[in-house]
Figure 1: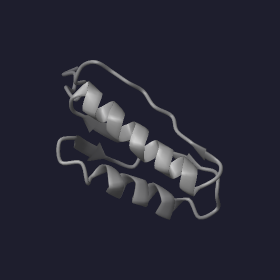
Figure 2 (figure 1 turned 180 degrees about the vertical axis):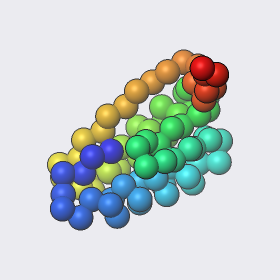
Figure 3 (figure 1 turned 90 degrees about the vertical axis):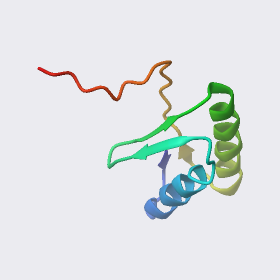
Figure 4 (figure 1 turned 45 degrees about the vertical axis):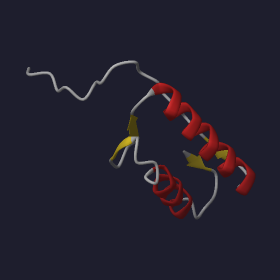
Length: 78
């Protein structure tokens, strides 16, 4: 999520807090990204709801989403 606003941090934090309200979704957040894990249909419904709400509540918001169909948390040993 990239809010095109000077005061962008509270908007991002609020969005992540709303994502955390879905107990069926596992969320890992770091300084670069927020990764979501769970059932595809549930994830997409949740994202649709939350992104739609964000677009209705705020102007000039960009979402950059990557969708991967496997768990990539494994760290290579090299």
